[in-house]
Length: 211
Image (tube, rainbow, N blue to C red):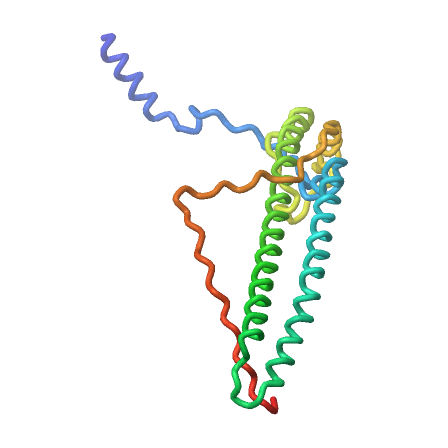
């Protein structure tokens, strides 16, 4: 008799709807955070952004300092080539001048490219440090407000202002007054990587007369 009762009980449980056995999820409580606003306006963020902009300005000034003499030399070389008799090639002195110009031009381009890459790494490094401060601040505000999920403001179409907790997160982030490091670590070289060999500069061909 006991075996029959146990079998009947097991069969009855097998037909209980799964929804009755599973625990219902609690309604989600959403908090919205404008991360971009915090990155731009937090105290240490604004200071870091100012320093990054100074790096950009310095690179622009360096580009102008490198470019002006190169433009002058390029024009002088073009004038010398144009003055050559029809069909005559540049002499040894002019060819050397052309090669020196092209080397300087390549070196300038390399320097400016490396400068741009360095600033991009610095900006990403700053953003990483800010993120490390914003994340725990968001968690703290979620706990204070009873939120179960946080959403970035840029991912929403429209919100009720009552769910925007940006100001509260910003206030917590501003409690940490330690300055951000705006100089990213140098990139590590890939093992086994061999830099490409420099190609010798080729002097430009003289322009035909009358053009």
